[in-house]
Amino acid sequence: MNHTRDIAIDIVPIGAAADEATQAALREPAGKAASGSKTNIFDFDRASLEHFFEQELGEKKFRAHQVMKWIHHRYVTDFADMTDLGKALRAKLEERAVVHAPQLIFDKESTDGTHKWLLGMDPKNAIETVYIPDKGRGTLCVSSQVGCALNCQFCSTATQGFNRNLSTAEIIGQVWIAARHLGNVPHQQRKLTNVVMMGMGEPLANFDNVVRAMSIMRDDLGYGLANKRVTLSTAGMVPMIDKLGEVSDVSLAVSLHAPNDELRSELVPLNKKYPIEALMEACVRYALRKRGTSVTFEYTLMKGVNDQPQHARELIRLLRAFDNAVQMKDAAKVNLIPFNPFPGTRFARPDEEAIRGFQKLLNNAGMIAPVRRTRGDDIDAACGQLKGQVMDRTRRQAEFRKRLDAQEAGDAAA
Image 1 (cartoon, rainbow, N blue to C red):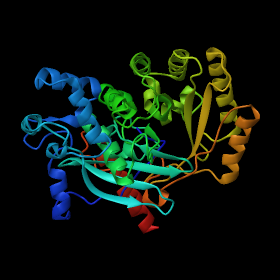
Image 2: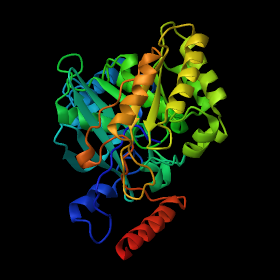
Image 3: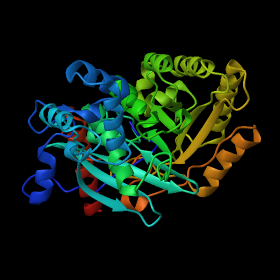
């Protein structure tokens, strides 16, 4: 999906141009054991790991708790090093299971401290994960799919097409790699304070794996994050928003980007299936589950497209209606995101005066509407710039490259 956090890397192509280390790193799928028959412990949240220990290994479930601490608190992946487990159990685990994270291909650090990782999922696909440090907090932007099927017009990920969903292991493995790199110690030395499911892909289209991974993020045996510090961002899969409200209590963000159906259907094609009225009703239901719950609406500002005063006034009416339905002031919060350009896009970033003018209209109407500061744009890690490497199963990547080649040829001729 992500139009809201973007992480685009100039990635080394897989093939003759790739060095031997990169090729080797990608040979083994991230969510699978090397043998193809062993169980990857990264795929389990607490409940499923307890079940595995009791039903598959014949062990007490507290042993599962010990293993979770070794993996997610101490970043140990070799069962032989888990010294509070008996030798017999360690041997049993070696035979039946692995702890296998995605393969690190390379990482980049921005001048502003933002950090981006390119992670290999299998021999032909790679995704990006981004860490954004700020005063008193550190946010990790996590991907849920290889590419994205939704084709939002202003999103760099969409130009890559779509290949597949990520496994739970491939999702939580991103957190593990970042946390280990940062020296994060849950409950003690916390460098990673927030996780946002805003990377590549639409999280609600990969519901079960994303929910299981978010369970590990929030578990004290995992990364111990508070519910409100884990945010799922969706383009608006209405039935799945309702389902999420039944099984999880994370923060919800909605990629709105337009205040009316005509414009939103152009920018976010999913709107044709789930128009704004249905989407807002689902958001009201989500907010009403628990008193005091707010929903964040993400709005990427694009020059001459959705940044005009009339758009701001429409947005104010829409979100006031949401506040009234929830019966809570500031139930709706807006994140204003200046568009981050990428090669081949037809959209542009508004000038600063237009951005601040739009924000002022919202603020004067009593709305919380911060402008998201662009971070990591020097390494293509800003919102909407994430790309990775996708073996596209659609025609979208080829069509985009064809348009880009034609544009470059036209520029050269001029």
